[in-house]
Length: 190
Image 1 (cartoon, rainbow, N blue to C red):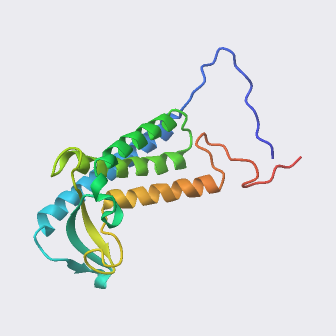
Image 2: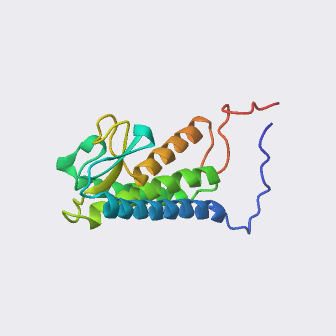
């Protein structure tokens, strides 16, 4: 079925973004930020200075580390680059939001934004100082001390979830403007 085109209205001002979609983006980002900040503070107050705490039968270990790098502490000599990349990424998402009309894309971009800003806050505000602060991580899977998987936090989970959703949306042809790319879903009937 071919999409129906709206009649052109010469006096109408084109809407570049959808307020509900942008509201979803902002809401998702703020929820991630609040949850990330709260869990990091809880982890620091309850776990710092203790050994790993085994939970869920050893599936998850709670253990605070201060990570100067990325996953598996990669890039520790380039910590100062992470805030720059974060600001550029958030700026790019802001630019995308100007044409955002699809709620699923808004949620994906909100999760990504919340994750970036959550870890960016650590880089800017935590020791050893701006812009090389260490990110607070506290969740380790299957074993303590990143034995099998990098230690992570809510911001990291949000980034992974948001990027995964964005990849799924892109792969299924769902565009940020709310339309679908041809040939990805319903076949056009002539």
